[in-house]
Length: 413
Image (cartoon, rainbow, N blue to C red; front, top):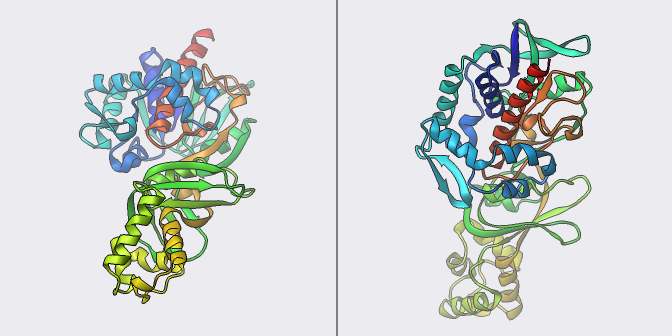
């Protein structure tokens, strides 16, 4: 019999297994994939945004869902601890825009290799098997039933991830196993996900990437839900890119509310300066068609869209543009508005919003309040954060807390 079985070889699972093994427990790590850390390979576009170089409070401020639950875990395992851990494991790190922390090599594989070698040194046994059920005897956890057979233990740490990127193994198995034991699974939705839009504006600009634009997302009451400057991408279904993924984490009521994206294409110019620029362009190109003049203002793919929204025929000569049309052109450049239909499917999301109800988990030890010997960690729990390394920070912190909690449970037994 093993002391502790960790189900799931992602960030939270590997940290939990390592913590428990370094504390003296015998640990088996069950992973359905042939390799550990499948999802880590694709985080940060294959570079692995390990954490965010910030304070505990900033992590909590960047976690819109149930941040108070994380206070203890993140305080004990703050970003500084995570950075020290990987440096001590031989991975040099660097800090980029937005305090995002990456390996200097820009290789996610370096992070996974460091964890794998640490696990091997700590004698964690890795078994490839897909867990199906948590075994219970006399009201307490006693093992895990997998596709390859039963694995007996004294405690189980469930860290199977959410339901995003199912190709990496995150297929929601953990929700089903926890629910079987009486846990409540809060509404599971995609987060950090591209957005589908109404109409044909985005498909007409498909493939166009914009840098240094300001994206605002407003709700039905015209209240700004998100505002940030950065990069976005027009696609056949709507909007994607870093700005849009960040915005999606702020939009939680698609069924109840109506959102729209408002894009400032010229954030460096206020309305007065932009109007002066338009007057100059129209004057200097007085005898040219507007479809040619507009090329100095927006990328080629945007020209027909911007002119259509401004009510200016493409063949209209610049000297024939009225003051009212110029005003509409300015308003379009400062606020290109696109109605949002909803998020893309959860399979395309970077993380899952929702999960095991936090009120059913001890925030200090990550122990289940429903059944002795069960611990939960990572994306499985109903907490999620914005993009920028915060979700991995949560995985490291809750994984370590679960490893320590399982050790405490064994000692008390």
